Image 1 (cartoon, rainbow, N blue to C red):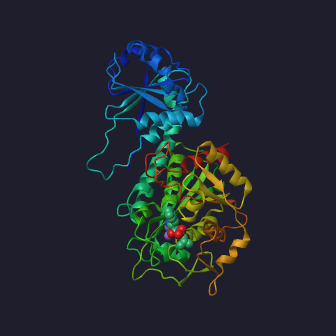
Image 2: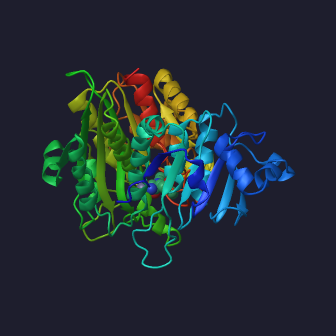
Image 3: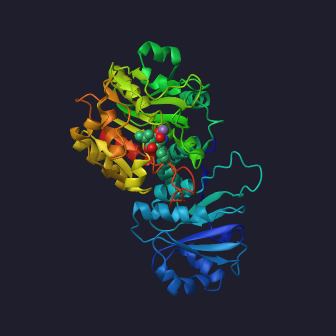
Length: 489
Ligand code: BES
Ligand code: MN
Ligand code: ZN
């Protein structure tokens, strides 16, 4: 797994700057102010910084953006990157500054000169997240990137400040790795093993195999996986950092390692993207990792349903009727609406076993949410205004787009089946909402619950501020913050 790039903090040393090779990134306020190190760099480069920050180009830069002075005179560095960071920078601006620096990172590495009041935690998070690169399967053409060093007056304090942020970075990068990984590598078995390995972080991890799931009556989940050579499982990850005996908060994830659509097979174009259909489970795993790494004072349980949706002689057919663990029967209209079948059983199991104080599930559930919200916001469906508001606040604070969507009993009409208790699809109109209504049937009235449809945000088509093109790890930061705000506050 590609751990986030480590960041080293060293004591400010003006003399050392002269001999630094690779890149130097200097943080400056909007009016071009830095500290003694910045002034030294300016003198060494014969006023290049003064001239650059007096330019119209500098004026145009937004907070967190930067400009390069290539091969600066008087220095051995290959580039001097001037990064604009206002005096009382917001969290987003400090992260953006870090990301700007990491995006330009080359083989020679970078020395970041950070003087004045810098939010080191946010800067470090931006540095670590944008330095992420999924190169596991490249044998050539890998962009080499050197070390990241931050030079500052009090490196110990800066490093301590950045510690929790690095736990977040590691959780996000874990999620990204899982989501980027192809399905012949991240098989159902491999996925469960990677989660089991998190036991060494102090999590309690159980893998329920197909026999256990059969005994529990998880017919909905098992039906989805029955066409695959790779066994289905439910993995339960417990972090008990809170009061002993207190009921946990539950996170539930859809973990379809590959979604061909099954017998209702998907068109070929773009099908390769369905390696990301375990994105919900990936986020749950990333959050659990972060909580364990930062030893969160909260009880949280993460449950993921891991399956592969394949067409096969044994695969589930349209028209089949399956029985969920709850006891409700479901007529399969479209085998491609598999995520809700997996979640139905895991949601029910989570409530029966843990009686959680609240429950949030994440899933790359519908293409319709992409039509509705694009790649900027995840869809938020909830039976509880307070929990929903708390989540939206956390997501906004973390810069992770999330938008509340409607629910209501009128949509249930579309799920009526002639021969079973319900159908698994409701047709095209409001496709994301009928999917949410389906899930709601497996949520008890007394459980505050949110369903996050992350189909549009898990693997957007372009790079984002904090992620190169590929998996984003959307949601790890928001959920980690929600746990901190709501359960540790
Ligand atoms: N995994 C897909 C949803 C998806 C689509 C995720 C695009 C990411 C990008 C899901 O299992 C699915 O196939 N949903 C169907 C539901 C339909 C058959 C009711 C869909 O959205 O078309
Ligand atoms: Mn599908
Ligand atoms: Zn799917």
